[in-house]
Length: 142
Image (tube, rainbow, N blue to C red; front, side, top):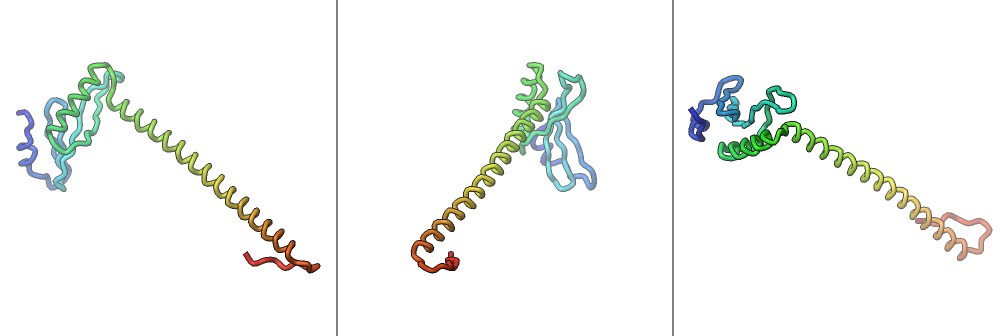
């Protein structure tokens, strides 16, 4: 029997574990908390092994649309799970580069602040020394 939103909504929640409803690769898991999660099971064209990819959707209609996109990807001999992992890795390397750049910027900024502070102190000393005719110079208050 094909899945419908009504079947998903009226299926009782299990006491423990989870219950799975299946329809042509689309899997709906019903958890004891009442949460429903969607995934797509398929055979990878690259490894010829069974694979599953989670679908970030909340309704059956959205899940069917996502499954259709994944089936089109499989039709082009591409693995949706491998592409997702590659995108996450690429995103992770970008964030790593951003973190490195931010650390470098903070380091340069703190170095610049120290240099500016030293310059202010030096100019204050010069100004104080020019105003004072004493042989011993007291440190100015900054």
